[in-house]
Image (cartoon, rainbow, N blue to C red):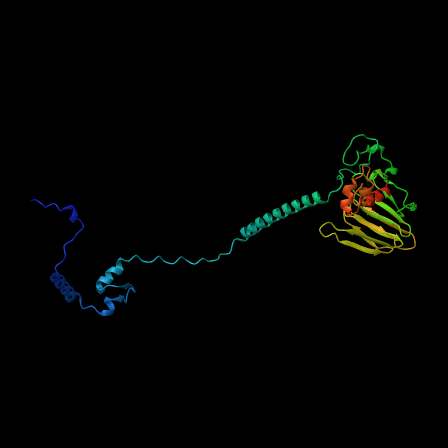
Length: 315
């Protein structure tokens, strides 16, 4: 038996069915399965709820619904079960330990930052480090004297009971008690000074590049103040009387002036064994190698004659 080979162009094509045969087949199906109601044939099926855009026989719809994949059952609800008390304690302990470790690390970092920010003198690593002024070794401070050679005089200064000589142009005198006078202050980061003022006497504008100063008035009254840095350059000032205390921030220009008619005395403490002093006028106009007249004239907006006259007051 021979079959005719279908032409490649005819693959996938079907012959049109005979309309009469289709009508006859539909009539036989209606006769054997029953009539189709409009609600069951078109639209939402009453049993399945499926929406169809083509007429569907009920039995065909039933068969179609059987073929549908059932929906997955909903996941079971999670029930909160109480943890074993020992397990709960362990979890809480682990959390507390982690938090404590983080806090310790944060505090350590803050301590390191603060130490780096406020340290002004070498830190003390022993009971004391009395300055050995005979040593030729140059260090930040002074070399320590042998502990066996330390004597009580290394920690004593006698001089604040004596008034300073105020018979000078400024009308003031400073009696210092720093590492130069008290060798035991080496590495201690502190020093003191007595300041005497004649009437109208002035401790002229100056700075301590390595220390903050705190001052109290013992006798008389003083007008004191300091100037903030640029761009503000504000004057912070106050009239102090006996017992008042005033703080001068580190390295800022400050002054004390006795505007009264009687002598005044003050005691100052500084946060360095060697705070240093830079008197503004003396540094600018009385340096060992004088600044150029051109520089000073332009800086102070005056002529060179005025500069020469001012410089002569400090030479």
